[in-house]
Length: 192
Length: 206
Image 1 (tube, chains in turn purple, orange):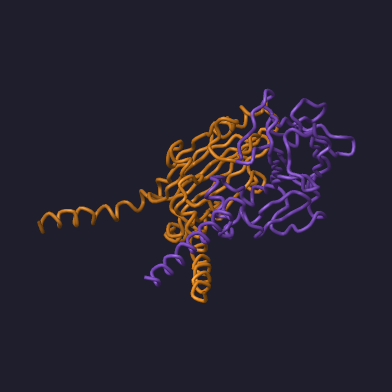
Image 2 (cartoon, rainbow over the protein chains, first blue to last red):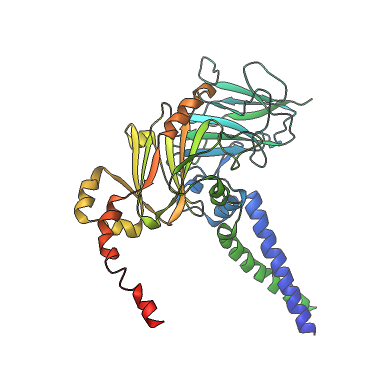
């Protein structure tokens, strides 16, 4: 009787620990093979045939298609440079330069990967639409109320993610540091 | 007490095994993966344009709204696939995914180097069956081996400004993915001849 109880306890524990950790890694992702520059994170290996099993599990769970290496690379950010989570009610400035690429797009998603509705139907910028300074640098204001210049509306949602996708770029599996890939900074400038 | 501790250790160790097995199994058992999401809205072996991503209706999460996207869901069991994608003004790319969303190949208009991206997609087996002389003439023909029989080809054309979206969509609308008929037709006489022979055999036994 005691043996049965102990066996059942061990099996129950195994199920909880095993499936629980799988759920955690599939939803939150792991640090395996990530490239972090500032507050931006990319997984260059996800676009290749030797993608790691954890990335495969989270891709299968979310239902997205990873961007192929011959196509480009996707960087995402969920917090600013001071590790403060991106808040749609605050004014956030994305400024600086981007790594070499033929085109890039910056898109705002909610945490589940949906676009955020707004009256302007503006969900992001492409590298051609952006207004730049004379030195080639740009400044995008991510805010709920309209702003002058490059305004990216947040729709006032609490948490969002920014995704910077570089197309036809040398940035990829071999990239390690900021020097190879100068990413724009993300700063929260004010909250109501 | 020792027994309980032993139970907990055994449980955690076994949990590690369960974790590894479930992580490896997840891509195969997932029901909401991209292939399953796209299956009801696409036809097999033909190009289906996807509706533009908008907040209420996006077939997949994290889709880039600056792109016109079309999907060719392929099945190579009847033969190799020929893909032709005319290059749009700004940027065009073609990405290949296996049934389980592994991105095994991607090419853009510049690396293709022509006005039209032309590719042949086949399984390794079909590639091996290509006649030798055809392989030589195929030097300028781009052949891609698909690791799985089924999968997805994603065709993307960038609209650098929202006003250029119709142009990007139009260039994708002119793309084709079709099962190649010539190699199949060449091989058909051989299997066709013995085919009727086994067919009556089971009837005779009954």
